[in-house]
Length: 345
Image (cartoon, rainbow, N blue to C red; front, side, top):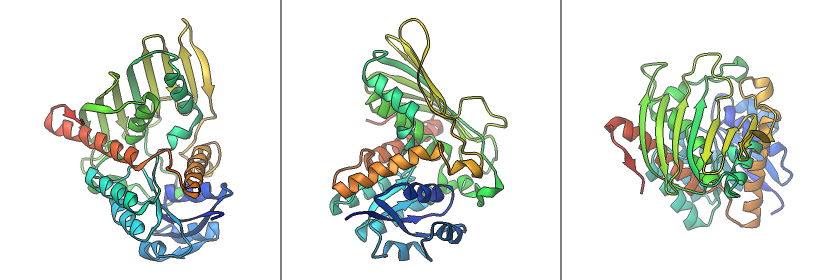
């Protein structure tokens, strides 16, 4: 197999993101897209086939792997149908809305020997990767605490098309599942550790009919690290500067200040110094969201997945990574409902 041939289910912001990523990968080819009001334009813009249903796309004989970018509550049905048709799977985060659904997809892929991965592109940005390498190398010793802020406001550039109505659908569960899983996954990856318990408070501030959009959580890892997580999509304009995706890490021998969209600073010799930097990532405007530097992480993420599938090796981001993100996010919501800490192990 010279190229991995893709189909994309979902034509919104992330559907176009992955279509653009494939365009930059030599050993990947986009064959068809399906679903959503923007699907005809997406198919036209990339010169690919438009399928009228996900079933038609899944059955396409020229497609080897399927990328699912629909709202999370729609993932499991198409994912299991794709596996039954023998297609490899790349699912945008969050993987599903229940742990049981994630486990069903993992089991189905394992039974058929199909590659499964989840869209955690933050692992492929320069600054988070530098944080990972420094922590794993012991640059600040044992990480005692992490304060993670993931706070943003909804962007509404009409040039994107579509809207955020799916985000407010109760079936979507809430922001901590839709977006907070990025911070959860990144800290698991950086630490090489697993979450063992959580305590959370969740609220809805923007619209009383919307599911959760703000969570303050406390996570404990099996290596002893304690992490606070402030995840919110309800921040009014102009938002807090440099708090879209930022983590402050305190270790036994130093500190790391990671702004995933700007710079990484380290202080392990009594003073702060810049250890890594990257150009700002602009997702708010359609004119910049599908260009570089934002696209770098998505291209590399899909390149790594493509290479793994073609080589017959497991992708580095696994279905289990997707399942854990769902489990931790849902545990935070359960903790908020019950007023009690929730154990994950």
